[in-house]
Image (cartoon, rainbow, N blue to C red; front, side, top):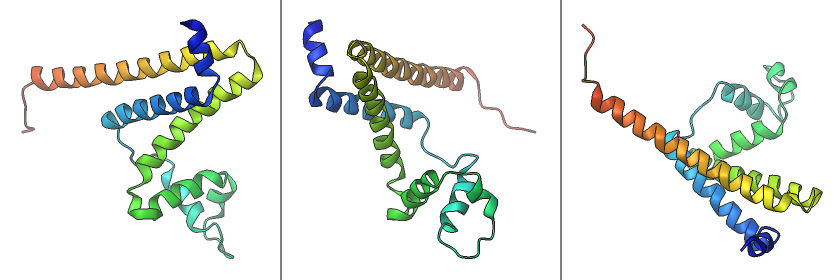
Length: 150
């Protein structure tokens, strides 16, 4: 069984399975906490809008941010009116999980089993956290009667 998992984790099929697990984990996470504007989104969008301008209105947002995140954030909101932002975030998350494991496998062969196990355990712990937060939120709504401010 372990030899089969080791062979699976070192091939393309293992990477594809890990990518699928990453997408599943992101889907569960996104059902609880959907993608929304964070504290730095305005800075990234300022940098994206002004990226190719000759006269920049707010240069500090461009000087203190790398250009990759503003381009990814801006394009994901520009294309299809932002409808593809959540799927793009899911694909980027799953790709980062696969890239992390691929880097570990490339660095040491003993990492294969550990990386597969760690990714699986991390995915399950995230799923468990999301489920328990759903349950606790549901319990709080049931246990607490609605009250209106007076």
